[in-house]
Amino acid sequence: MGFAHTLRPIEISTTDFPAVSTPNDRLDFRSESTFVTLKDPKSRWASGRRQSARSDDPKLTRFVSILKAVSPPDALVVPGGPDSNRKGFEEACRALEIPYGEATQDPEEKGLVLASLRTAGAARLFESSRDLHFVAWRLRVKGLETLRHYV
Image 1 (cartoon, rainbow, N blue to C red):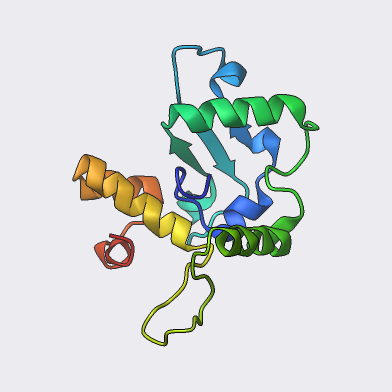
Image 2: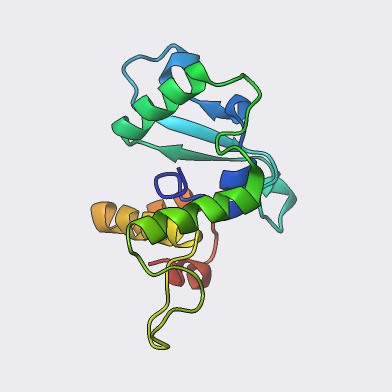
């Protein structure tokens, strides 16, 4: 979800199922979009206190719909919170033999960190749309300076 919804790591770790809206929840069976209402979004502006993220990935929507159906109603999407989310990410990287973390064997090479999912999601959005305003809207950022860090 961090990749497709371009969520920050803390947003992934604190999202519970009531904050996730699938087509089944909206009785919109033609839609392939999943929405996440962010509980405590990072924003300097009072108008930005209520934010949501959207993914149009049909495979993710089906996966999240199934996961939501078999999980307790108030459960976290990623159980355990921020620490276990990071540890799970590192275990997956280790199993796939992908360099991870701030320091790797090669000082010139940086490994993946959980925040890399947001950056990769932004790059994928830009590659598919070629629309910086669309990418900025999906990332929930206002300035082009901030957007430059992602694409």
